[in-house]
Length: 284
Ligand SMILES: NC(=O)c1ccc[n+]([C@@H]2O[C@H](COP(=O)([O-])OP(=O)(O)OC[C@H]3O[C@@H](n4cnc5c(N)ncnc54)[C@H](OP(=O)(O)O)[C@@H]3O)[C@@H](O)[C@H]2O)c1
Image (cartoon, rainbow, N blue to C red):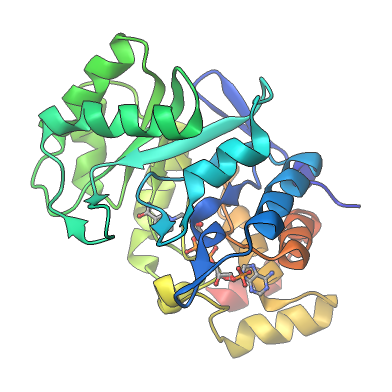
């Protein structure tokens, strides 16, 4: 069985993770239908058995009957020492699921505490500030740096940023990861940000790497070049998409999202798929 270790490791601050991790957003359901709780608890436990030690989540990943953080807590606590859970704050939803305006800096502590309660932890390993429309992230990031100093958070990251936000945050506290949408045929305007992160030893954690422009709707984005490479390797298009993101540098961490046990195994196996220089060049 190919495990999450197949693509090697990266360090987020002082925390070592396998480069293939897991995104929790798809645990709560698909197309409006609640997920089968036992099934997705099984997916998470299998992920950890297969070496996943980096899980991405958020308190705002919930559907009417399911909460990603609650499922993680039920499946994995008491947590293994080596498990790194990354969450994100900034956006929020009211109990009915309606989106709220981006949190003010003074509201971020409450969002951090919400994650602590739901996950059943007394600190968070990595917290990303998911910005939305801010000219400067300094005030928000400064509030999170205070919570880091207070011991509630180990390491800080950024999400959904424009390139200038990275330096604004770094002027305040170290940034261990940047999480933005990115994939073989989606948001390639981030190519330079990916390189900048690599040069600075900051992890780049792409989301929608499989779904591409399908975004929240999910599924595997259609791309004939990807499909041809998949056929040549006896692999699936999802695996080629993951392998491509990992090929962009040793600082690339994959967090494929799935509620399907077979997809989980397939996604982890993508860490052992090596695309040739010609294939990579063909994908641009
Ligand atoms: N920072 C942010 O703003 C932000 C935004 C969105 C997401 N995220 C994070 O990034 C993670 C990844 O993003 P994502 O889950 O939206 O998209 P993704 O990983 O690009 O793709 C997930 C979609 O592909 C399907 N899928 C996964 N593996 C597959 C396989 N091997 N074969 C066929 N279909 C497969 C999933 O459905 P099945 O369940 O049927 O497998 C789901 O519909 C999320 O889980 C979340 O943790 C962060």
